[in-house]
Image (cartoon, rainbow, N blue to C red; front, side, top):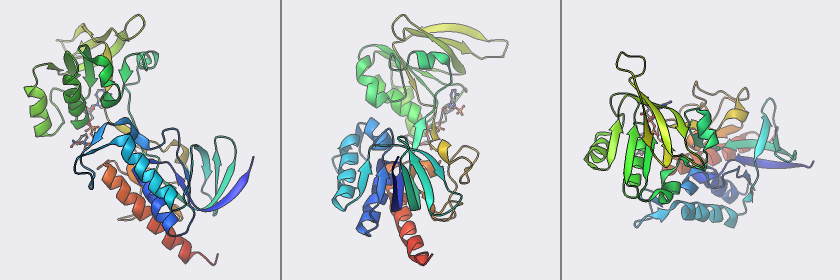
Length: 315
Ligand code: NDP
């Protein structure tokens, strides 16, 4: 077990963490970044990004993350492919322990741990994980060319995933628990206009079946009403698109979180409830969840940390 000190510890990568590292390293703060178990974050699971300024022709998610990462390395950020497992924010400097038991003593911490896809909580999702169950159509859609698939959810993500899959798969079921889509009008129209997307309103998935992988799903419609019905659909791929949950478990009890687990920040800053701890990106953003917004808060977190260190340099 080793122990080392740093002025700025960044927990988590992705556009927020790497941008914070660029700013902190250019301010000579020598940040250490713990990338976590998905270096580069959610964007490494996407294909093309068309809405990040500066890429008029679009850019592949993993490529963009690699470029931001290299930009941070260029200015001296130390980036480690490791995970912080526990933190103690009860007194400054903060004591953080990684998965190997090594200790980092940090004057400031920037949390940028992002968010992860939600699952329904069915045991079959675990059973068939990687065998037909996925939360990323753009990552795994390719495997379902000319096959039948289902997407669960009624928001923009579900519609986007269904539209993407409809270009590859033979047929796409969109399983929606309510009798309407929550997605924006333009996305709804695109989905409704696609001949090979069938929307199953007021339907819930209660199980999956198949020998060596997913071969179908058990569906119940209009559950709890006189018209309740049970039926199966034949599918090879089952995609979840029912929202995200912030990766903030290790901070529970250490800083203030909202009811959904998102980190609470103060006003238009990245300050958390603990002075010296800052939050950036999706872990503190239930609303926008965009790469450019995450990069912006990463910048602000580094500037907030720099100012904090200047104000507390005598302590
Ligand atoms: P949302 O929270 O908007 O939608 C989640 C969907 O999943 C809802 O239809 C919800 O149903 C459904 N759902 C949740 N839990 C379950 C469950 N247990 N069983 C079945 N269905 C469930 O999440 P999104 O990820 O779609 O979007 C998040 C934000 O990102 C939104 O603001 C969205 O507009 C934005 N976004 C924008 C995009 C774009 O503009 N291109 C693309 C993707 C996202 P119910 O309605 O019943 O609650």
